[in-house]
Amino acid sequence: MRIILLGPPGSGKGTQAQRLVQRYGILQLSTGEMLRAAVAAGTPVGLRAKDIMAGGGLVPDDIVVGIISDRIEQDDARNGFILDGFPRTVPQAEELDELLKQKHMRLDAVIELRVNESALVQRVETRAAETRARGEEVRIDDTPEVLIKRLASYRSQTEPLIHYYSERRKLITVDGMMTIEQVTREIGRILHAIGAVGSKASKKPPSTKRSLKKAAREAPKPALRGRPTAKKAAKGARKAVKRASQATKKAAKKAVGRLAKKVTKRRVKA
Ligand code: AP5
Ligand code: MG
Image 1 (cartoon, rainbow, N blue to C red):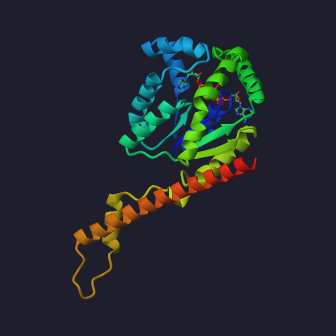
Image 2 (spheres, rainbow, N blue to C red):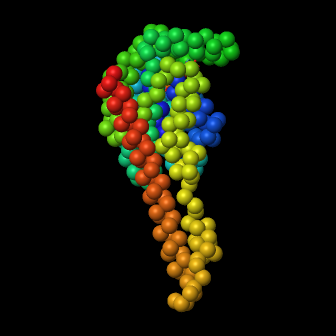
């Protein structure tokens, strides 16, 4: 599964990403968390990002693209990931498309968490209060003043991604005003519907090696034309594996398209 969680600050990207990690054991890649770690460690990236983050702006594209590109190279990202807070600009989305293409990876869906702006201030204030109550350091950008700037950055630079992914039939919008549990359930439902998890369509196609053995074992006994050679069985199996994987990809693509269409219709009605 490879998905993007898109939404304004406080919409629940981090909360939902962590729940998906627990449920599906998939990797969460949060550029915000990575940048905060870099700031805390005082690395060159951290030094460049520190003031920008504190002011509610966006860190330059080349920095975040570099971070993500290095990270998805690593072994634990091979089976998929949840991008939380990346991409955040159209150039970042274009770079991501290129990266995935180079690595022969496919994006399953972009899940947009839509939340009323009025709820965001309350959420961020609650998070700051809870962090303080735990005796932990509050995020420097978790103040109503910086939140206003973060929202402005979101509107001007990140919101165009809604159009970007909607055009590519990847966008699925979820009502982020529901309870945390309801949002998780809705995302789970979507992931099943598009075949990204759990359903038959999402199952990895059998490994070629296993399929070859199975095909050889199950090859029909010869009638008149001589015993099927292992070579023939292997060829048949390779074809079957290719067909299965194409069918899986096609089914997932269709499901995203269908869901995206529904969302567009709903928007047009509204
Ligand atoms: P980042 O760390 O990504 O912050 P953000 O996008 O501003 O979002 P938040 O982490 O504040 O909110 P969230 O959506 O994760 O909500 P959460 O689940 O915590 O980025 C920080 C900064 O780093 C940026 O401003 C930028 O400077 C830089 N940066 C990062 N990525 C970048 C990039 N790609 N390019 C350039 N710069 C980048 O929830 C918030 C609170 O609400 C919690 O208390 C939670 O319990 C509660 N909550 C969640 N869901 C619900 C719900 N359904 N109902 C009620 N409460 C809820
Ligand atoms: Mg977050």
